Amino acid sequence: MFALDVTDPDAFGADKVLWEFASSNDADMGYTLPQVNVVRMANGQWAAVVANGYNSLAGKAVLFIINIETGALIKKIEAETASGINGLSSPIAVDSDNDKIVDYIYAGDLNGNLWKFDVSSSDTANWGVAYSGSPLFVATDSLAATQPITAKPAAGKATATGQTSGVMLYFGTGKYFETDDNLVPTVPQVQSFYAIWDQCDKTSAAGCNGVVSGRSSLQQQSIIAETSGGNTLLADGSSANGDVRISSDCEVAYGSTLPTTTTTPCTNNINRRGWFVDLISPVYGLQGEKVVSMPILRHGVVIFPTLIPNTNVCTAGGTSWLMELDQFSGARLSGTPIDLNNDGKVDDNDMVMINGVAVAASGVKSQVGIIDTPAVINCENGIDCKYTSGSSANLWLVKEKAPESVAPTLLPARRQSWRQLL
Image (cartoon, rainbow, N blue to C red; front, top):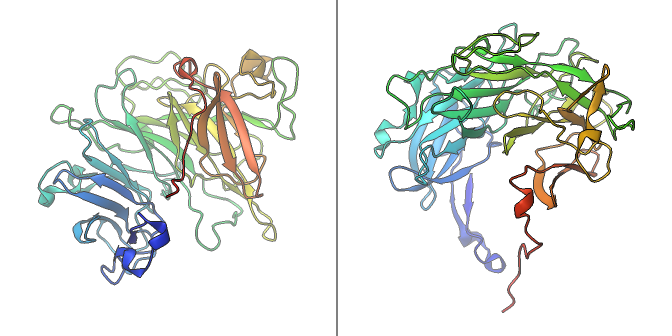
């Protein structure tokens, strides 16, 4: 990992390399694919927070907290101490009480562990893995096989009905950076997308229950319908521009109030700790679909792309689905989020007809191959635009309805950047 001084790009040279932290400094530093966080710590220092990455000498999952001014190691925290085949993925730093200082850091690893690091103390000696060294959650499929977490999680306040404190963590599972990760075996492992409620933060009552015992503590959602070949009938009688997915609409009872929907996969379980959806196509079954990109939280919606490798080993790329689900339940939205008929509006005409019933789309299939996390801007009055490039080298634009809280405050176009000429 490098720190470079690029204040004056024209004068950049060898003396502008501030410091380097490499495997020669610590053998637990692996291939640093994970992203770095630059944050203010409780001890008053600014730090670069980075995971050790993959294929380190001992194969552990390790978090490094490094002084950004000097490159000195402030703290090294081993999440999984046993040597093996593991590595920590991109972390997300969370300020739970809005004082501009990091309290907790969350990160996943190759063995499906979602770790919580407590760095809320001003004494670095007290920094370490929360919950007595146990992971907050372990992602496993229905056969109890662990699912790798390689993408950076997203985090938001736990404010759903029945939630009194804590943080919601959103992440998908899957791996796509090593040789053969692009191959789809005859029976691929099921990968999933999760939303996990960490009940404990600085405002929680003593004795709060942090560790989530497994997917049995979560409410399942499912992909219940999927169109193919562009044959997607909309409520206005037209065909959608592309294929869509429809998800279930189960309630998630975070408290003790019983839910009212119990049709499979919905249950009447209470005191849930989040939700999950398995990435299984109702048309094609298991396709090796996975999530290797960071999700976005936007106005009560969680947005994430999936990745389906191309099974033809002589052809590059693959495809993706851009999914949009309710942030707190994982259910399909009550109203359609996407302009499916390309009329520049998002209304009831964009609802999808499934067995004679108009329902909202939960996802749209990529038209440009494999995509990454999209950039989202409020581009028109009442319309959000998602821009993403694909493995086909083309740009894809998806228009959707902006939340009502955004549309009235739409600002005119303004200067985004400038270059000063001296």
